[in-house]
Length: 282
Image (cartoon, rainbow, N blue to C red):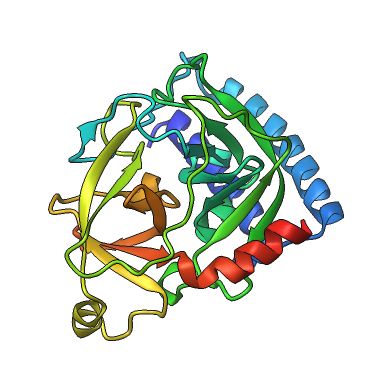
């Protein structure tokens, strides 16, 4: 292993250890004071890491690889004006969607990538576009029963610092409250993370009957929907938190994928009373 590789590996490993120390793997919320202290400590550590990396490694041109949904077709902006790109720490990112002028919905597992920056009105995420609206997150609201995606309750509300301006590039999406029957074709969208392009993509998925899902996956958590895209790798990890859209309404939230084929989505409708209570009280 080269000196550069060894130092980089050591620093990144130590950084991850620091970030993970004392954290609950679920999306337990910290107090405002502890969160601010954590962010301050992270900034100090980042400065130290940068200084050490500059000593160990020659300067290089910065590059970011933001990618499309694998196996999907290129979308035309503004095909899905409710879509949100959530940029987190250490290069992690998720999808999300605007449900009110100051609220974005996503998957609870994305909480671990905080602090998140929300970008609305994006098509190509690699270069800033005039249509972008960027927001910091004022508060994070995870479902209290979330522990990990396979146990369900994978839903997170983000209260933005400010209100989005509605236009042809940015718009809210309403919720689908009627249960979709097996065989219903819906849409998923996102930027993905594997292929070498940064443009927004989308694809069709077919909803499976719940009894069929339970037959194949008998331990399936309540309020999870399973759907098949017909293309391997659609959706993928970077699309986590993006909406499952049926009849132009948000029906589910992409949570995880099984064996690169079957996608699992949090069914939104059963959580609407909780969603309403959070949005009214925050």
